[in-house]
Length: 396
Ligand SMILES: Nc1ncnc2c1ncn2[C@@H]1O[C@H](COP(=O)(O)OP(=O)(O)OP(=O)(O)O)[C@@H](O)[C@H]1O
Ligand SMILES: CC(=O)N[C@H]1[C@@H]2OC[C@@H](O2)[C@@H](O)[C@@H]1O[C@H](C)C(=O)O
View 1 (cartoon, rainbow, N blue to C red):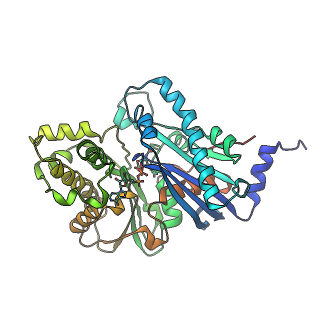
View 2 (view 1 turned 135 degrees about the horizontal axis):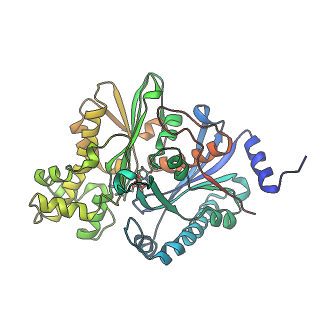
View 3 (view 1 turned 90 degrees about the vertical axis):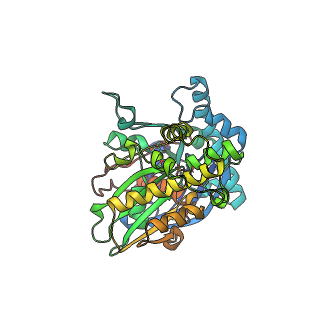
């Protein structure tokens, strides 16, 4: 028999281990920092046993954010910048991983794999680009080969392309992690993640084949953009500004008036649609260009909560449902209060109640998808693409 080369042998070895240690990386649409989750896995699929060993978010500095913003969600950008950033982000994420491991006192040899989301720079589902003959498309950069070579750790990356190839929009991938780690027989659950964009997974307690996982609309992206523009702060910490203003209902109605909100499920979106130009157009249509910056932040915060509540009232009405929030928006008390007000029958908690750190949830998801890529089988849940995702980059 022809011997396996060292890379294939490495894959066989880690696949045969009773447990694997993996790092999940998420760099989301908020561009706040790199989430790094060190996880232990045994088994795969619905039988996965999981433990979060360490978690850290390493904030991005302003220089890095400005660099990424030159291409982020832009219809036209400098191709050289895009090309440079692909390699630069891979290298930079590798440096941050090494820094985190050093801080935790863990050697690279102890880590079996890294699962890296990369940085989304453009998301273009067919429904949004509307071009005949072009498929759903999405682009994440920060190449896995750079991470693998610099850290010396097998890296799995670029998870979203396979989802698209198999008929999806490339997102939300939360479905797989939520079904595996967040579902419970006999309990109707909504797992709501509010990052830059809000997305939700419906996990019916009787039969998981009824699962729904979809983006809903903006999470924090508009609040962040307006807070930066009018208050020169990266975000509205603890909703301090939102509590100063009042909700402008004319503007709120205009913000909610977009075909995305009545498009078929599942649907995905991003800052390509929900950006400051979207807000300005809604202000013009509703004759509210003169409202105070505080009223604007309050209304944008209410927009996030109202969009989510309207979705739940339309698709998931019912009494016996628990909602578990995660992502940075779970730390925004104004949004949580507005949600509870609009959904009085719902029990709202955050994912800590499920043993999942709300800030770490998406990084854990990618670690879990990495574990699936190594030892799982394609998971058929509802109508969603049953595929193993991720591309392998070897250190040598
Ligand atoms: N204490 C807080 N008060 C208000 N908002 C907060 C707080 N902490 C975090 N946030 C919000 O959460 C955002 C970061 O959320 P998160 O890290 O979940 O987003 P992301 O992963 O980048 O986005 P996505 O999931 O859409 O890719 C911040 O930009 C901020 O708007
Ligand atoms: C294209 C892209 O990066 N989408 C993100 C984004 O951030 C939240 C929402 O929009 C979600 O659809 C997705 O991320 C999560 C991790 C997902 O795929 O489940």
